[in-house]
Length: 241
Image (cartoon, rainbow, N blue to C red; front, side, top):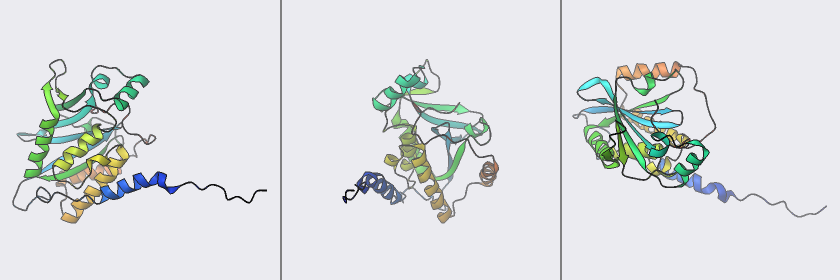
């Protein structure tokens, strides 16, 4: 029997993800935008996960009972129906045309889905942060697509490193929240950062409005969501229907 020492796996393979996680954990808020000052209006933004996709939902200012839903997707996959395994490879591994959804809805995503199938974070923005987020959206949004109401051409290509998770992370960072958009490659990575942002809210005493708090309590009491294996975007990100 040989006395040679068996080869030991090098730890360097996991060093990159670890360093990325540590770097993302060091990202602080933009203090020029967040937290809100005591004398300025505050705005709520909801981050919603459903079926592997991420959307951002805000209340329409002149009609609180209506909601504006922002989403990001690959045009060919979501609007043109070019899906399947070849579509998944195309959308993630090759830069392709993207679209930005900006839809006014009477019913938000968390009310359109069965209990337990949606994850939701309600975050608080300053007026300045809300305006910076809107500027981010406008910069991502190109010309309207008349054949697809509520959709606009995206100004950036869709690919593995620019999906709906990165889009959501970029918008939240633009608003000043302590989050790293480049570390939002999967739903799980974005979830870790959103939970960290929520802890910042707790430290700053920024709790959602009573109505939002009761909704969050109801969501926690809902049956656990069906879980699927970890993934980034299944094919191409798109707002939940």
